[in-house]
Image 1: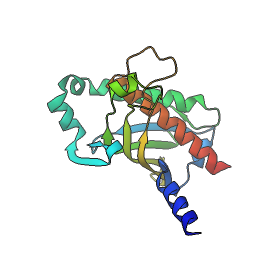
Image 2: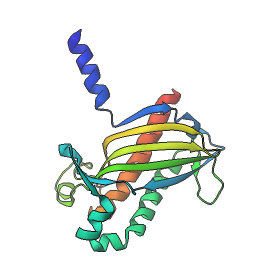
Image 3: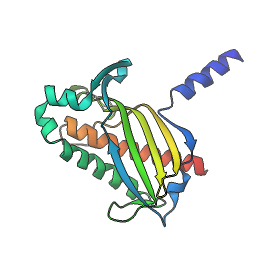
Image 4: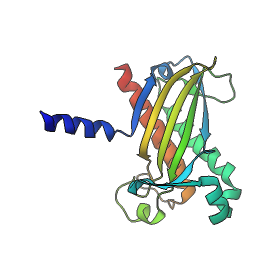
Length: 196
């Protein structure tokens, strides 16, 4: 009995996405719309695969170590937004993301820690998640009136680094975009589980 309890506890703690409050089910309304924001402002650097955290803000790190990426950061964020939106809107039973309309809900992706992953690991592995970006933070869903609808805790979620038969090099920007596509899929699957 004790072993079973331990296994159940380990299984729960290993879940990458956990609903901490509310429900994602309101996002499964086809007649509603959603907006998407991606917030890196408090993201700190980490090696989440090793559970190693730092106090170094991601943007400060990029400015010092990778000014090229830093200078085109807005382009990366736009691509992340596009990949998330495309994957989310592929599903039939969802509030469609459309930033041009007054949205019924806003999906806020908030990074606390980020692990950039590895181009080398992504290139030389048969696993599409190898070398992928890892995130620790929250996804908050807020209604148009400001009411918090749902908070999802993100526990070291690793996104895809490549697609099947992907001919593009899994660069940092590519891994970031595919991470957001993976996150959109997992959030939708979690919402479906809640509905069922």
